[in-house]
Length: 202
Image (cartoon, rainbow, N blue to C red; front, side, top):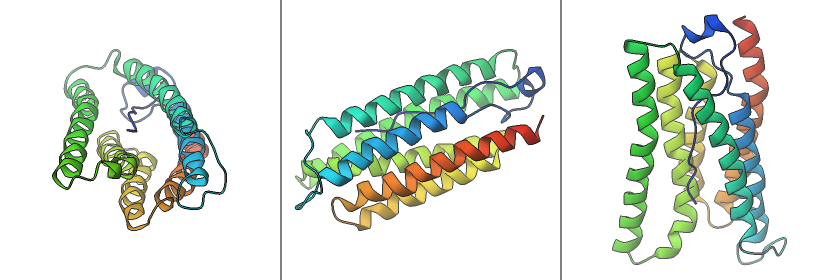
């Protein structure tokens, strides 16, 4: 149940190619917003000892995966476009940030698998994957925001990292509610603010 993701989306114009950070993240943000709101939202209303709604067990994961795939495709296309024509240190920065996703989620897989095996609690993966994914994504957004001088991306990453870890203090379905409302809401807000950020740089 990992949140694979994310690099920015669509370059605005020829000037933005030479300015790291001036890429359009709206499609990626919107895809992840849907993933969080629908996927984690469905898990929130259908899990726990007294669920609000009875849903097929596969539905929350299917909704989450659909949003994540859409956002990831938009992000990957954007990252590729943003790298065109970029050379030198900026090109290396882009490649290193791209590789951070594989490293981050491989480390998350090892951590979750190791913890659940060591304590013989495989059911914990249901909560550790979504919260851990938000944490890893948040940290990588922090790095991307700093490298591209994108304050909105940096703040979104800070929020996701804090929300993902704070959600662990709650029992099921609490973490799913936190991710759906606080995480999904943050992506919706970021989608709107991204348009304003881009307009300010035109």
